[in-house]
Amino acid sequence: MTTSSITTLILGTLPENADPATHALAGPWCAAPASAEEAGYLMPPEPLADPERLETAARQARQLVSRLAPRLGDAFNAIYETAYDERYWDFVLAPWLVRVVETLVDRLHRAEGILQTFGKLPLSVPVLPPPEETAIPDFAFADTQDFIMGGILNPAWNHQLLSRLLERRWPESWTAVELPRVRRAASPRPSENPVKRLARNILFSLPFPRIKGFSLRQSLELSLVLLLNRDRRDDTLPLRLLGDPSAPPLPLGFTEDEALTFILSIRPQSLQEAAIPLSLGHKQARIRSRVVSVAACEDDAYRIKMALHRGRGCRMIFIQHGGEYGYVKTSVAYPLVEYRQHRFITWGWKHHGLLPGNFLPLPHPQLAALRDAHREKSPSLLLVGTEMALLPYTLKSMLRGRQHFAYREGRARFVAALPEPLRAQTLYRPYFDVPSSLEDAPWLLRRFPEVQRCTGPLEPHMLGCRLLVLDHAGTTLAQALAADVPLLLYWDPASASFTPEAEALLDKLREAGILHDSPESAAAKAAEIWDDVPGWWARVRAACKPWASQHALTNKDDVSHVWKLILKDV
Image (cartoon, rainbow, N blue to C red; front, side, top):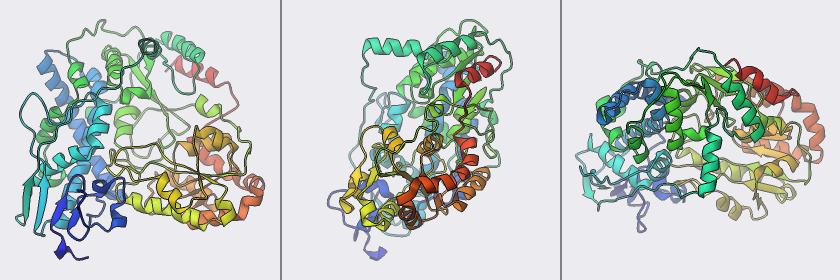
């Protein structure tokens, strides 16, 4: 195919009559869940696939968030005639603001890549009209979660955004074809049973709310400990101090003022309600420290309630809830939302590269409950995959956009390289469904019908399999190490991006034959050890201890007692 035959550039969803000979795509999401690459469509290179370019984009995003946070707080105070300080507004705004800025910066880099790839071609480009200046926006969002699902992961919303960004440097060789306006109403979460909602609100109002891995009794006991904590230190890092003034300007000449206008125009209904005058009450919170559930990142109503406590001076403690914290090299959300709190309790690590934070390592009950729990119950090889979202919603060290094509192909290469009898004993566990993602389990199982799909809760399968194989580093890796599950890992080192501290630990796994740089190598190792996995694991498991001590910390102590001792003085 030559570019001379291309006549149309698609920014949104690919029309049914499209053909690779005549249509080019702004990105892989245009054809989701099908593979635009397998179909042969021309697309720009993935703009932030290079780890250094991704880190530059993250620096741009962190700087923009740090600059916008105080301006947004001032804007809300002026609109609603309130006088809340940065403690309140930083807590309310951070999760949503970070998501918006990450998306905006990513799409600016994508728009720049689209212009570099197609800017000199004579193309017809269907665009969506700009938003009308009316009380009813084209795309309305109920809350942060609704914005993620109905905005960031919605090809139509991205179509409108890219239409506006490309207008800034619209090539003379392009012809804009305006499509009918698209509207999307806010979609609040489904109504909850009143009794369940009441119980949930009560549990979330505890100084130590229900956290995964902790029992109700433990939550109550730790809440009492926090009630007795009278320490007056506050190590919270304000958002305004967490930027990077050396970050380069945004692509396409996009300015901070333009970003502020854009962000105010798309704020969800929940954040409009956040500034309705509410009394912050006492100058000093009666409870000086609270643990906050990670639900606060996407549950705006809960976050606003916690922000009222924060506005009174209460110090907030967040807890690691997934495996990748601490070793992904690049992140925007982690330092700006969670690490900067008075304390961030980790699964063992104390530093995260150059990202600032108030880190406190403690053994977590979620992992302690799995300690040495593996017992083979079936001679199965369990292969676990991760998400393949084609519309990125973070600026974090993970595969992005077009990189998922090679990632998925690697999984097929692994299965194909297994001996046929072992392939028949393989279970595949796909990731949860995410909008605008590449087709997952059906794609693999059509190619290898002898492989079975793993259904139901993952944990029993993991604890009872003979061998676990992971093609990514995530929460399942931490759980497996805590449970002493025999495992193999593989990924392409050229596309993986870890902190220098993590790379040194991964080298030990590579030397032991646990981590492999290709799916074929991992498959060969699986075949080699299959008849005596316990014997092999006994010889190599020691290589996992350095990684596990940093990223899957467990010990034989009474975990609840350890937390009580620490939280009374935090």
